[in-house]
Length: 299
Image (cartoon, rainbow, N blue to C red; front, side, top):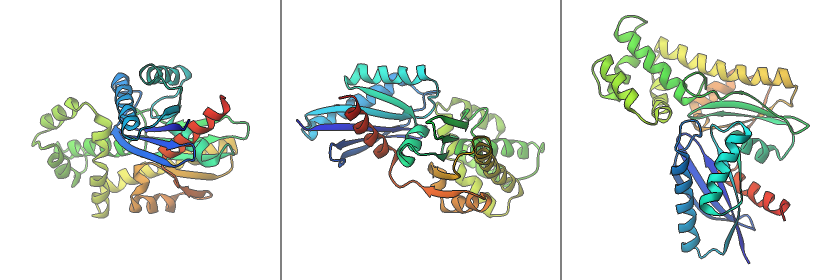
């Protein structure tokens, strides 16, 4: 009987589901709605996964799914991972292991050896895998109180700067015009109203990152400060983690912001003393390979 394995990479902006064969060949890769455990609908997420796997199984005439590994943004504690795993197993009937999206990258990239990962996408977090298998992390507190240097953080900083500029409570910035244009409002009250009505605020804020970057290249002083503060915050997380753990100074850079070549160059310029690795395989593929590995271990 042919066996198939499922890898899921669930982030705030999007979810990618991948099915591979026992020969590690991709059967199908599908993009679904984003999911973050801290502010997402778990029932809907599990339903989307189940419906997608059912369709793939029917269309490709697959015999059996053996294991699921899901990397999910926003899961940290064991009971959170267990809750997501149980819901997926309940709907799919497939043995499931849930890890944080950061753990998928750590284990999948360094294959159990010491190393670090920095994710800067809708949210941000950095973590190190130590010699004894311990994972130590910094950041990842969510867009309201943390996630420095993330897309949502840049967006929220831009909204604040635009409103302060409009009311002459802060320095003037071209972000004012661009943010008002983005929201389609002419007064702070309109902006605030539309902001709080948005269900997926982190994803929406992440869409403002290109506006901040564009303003930076136009020489806007406020945008320059925002960009510099975000990058220095990411660098600080990495350097502090390295100093506290003594981990080998090699780091995988992942997340949507690093796909922007300008941001990538700006960040590399500020980061000293690290060997940089860029993501070679998609996280969903790393998760699927881990699913195959765990299925073999559980025989």
